[in-house]
Amino acid sequence: MTTWGERLPLASVHSPSPFRVGKYSVEVENLETVSLYLIDLLNNGQRNFLIDEIGKMEFFSRTFRFFLEKAFSTTEVNVLATISRTDFHPLLRSLKGKATYLMELTRSNFPRVLEEITNLLKNLPSE
Image 1 (cartoon, helix red, strand yellow):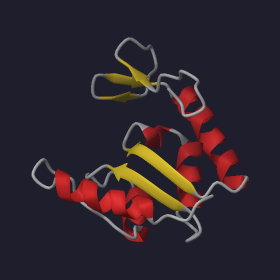
Image 2 (spheres, rainbow, N blue to C red; image 1 turned 90 degrees about the vertical axis):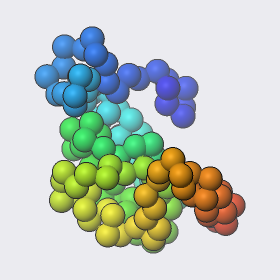
Image 3 (spheres, helix red, strand yellow; image 1 turned 120 degrees about the vertical axis):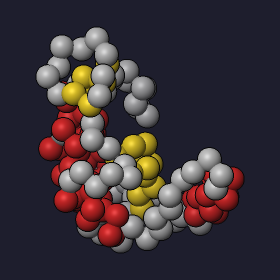
Image 4 (cartoon, rainbow, N blue to C red; image 1 turned 180 degrees about the vertical axis):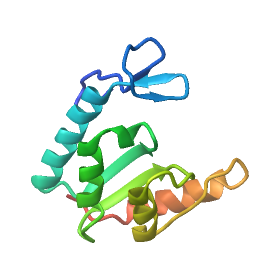
């Protein structure tokens, strides 16, 4: 479900879509719809974004990649995101290079990382 209340499946094991990640078929049209909405928010002054996740599936959308490039190109925008550990695309490597904080999440460090992220979120400037 989107943050604006719309149900848009991004992937399904039952979809006929030819875009696949593992057993899932990716609904690229729905990714495009969400990405256009994110770009609109960015263009209208939204400065804080939470993205779960930036992975292979999301990279099927050119519009999502454009949003990422635009959001990560300015220090005025704060992006908190989970990012694939595997460097499967040059843009992904670039995003990791632009990150202010880059943390690897494991089961053993989860409490510490959760505390760090909570503290970061508390200190974000309000919209």
